[in-house]
Length: 197
Image 1: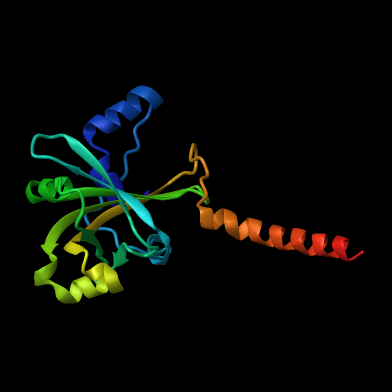
Image 2: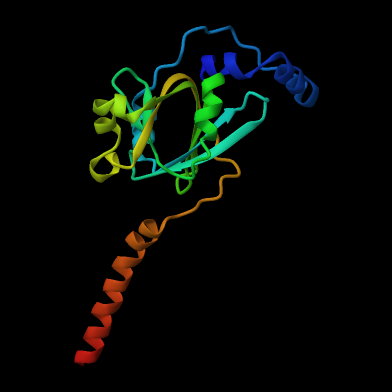
């Protein structure tokens, strides 16, 4: 766990719960600087084809939204910020509205086959795509540019890797096909040999 993540998430109430349930609280020295994504975090982010983003409404209710796209659609910008294209969709605008009054967000990125997860805390701003054509080009490749209504840019405050405990491995069709295709080819080869005998 990064020290900054600890600063932001281990509130007095959390420390009290740790003390009550485990007999000790995880007290570490304060660390006021925002985290900087390292090579492992950047590589992990670039491989993702989906993530979850949580925000909080002005009435205090949390909201979690799933975001998906081609691997790497969540971009790491040169300044260490993250950005993704917000496509025209169901028109609910919940994350956009929530971040207008409270810019704090949490991203939850999963790699189910490898049982890895990365949590990222940050500050989000939602930008009109028409006013930022260069950024649209950077975050929405090719035909996706026309579907982009907004760009969500996130200044990373902290991140934390979670343990793999209780993550059920899940595999995509592509994952399964990459394992099954050589088996099919071998079966076809053996069937051809048998037929030739």
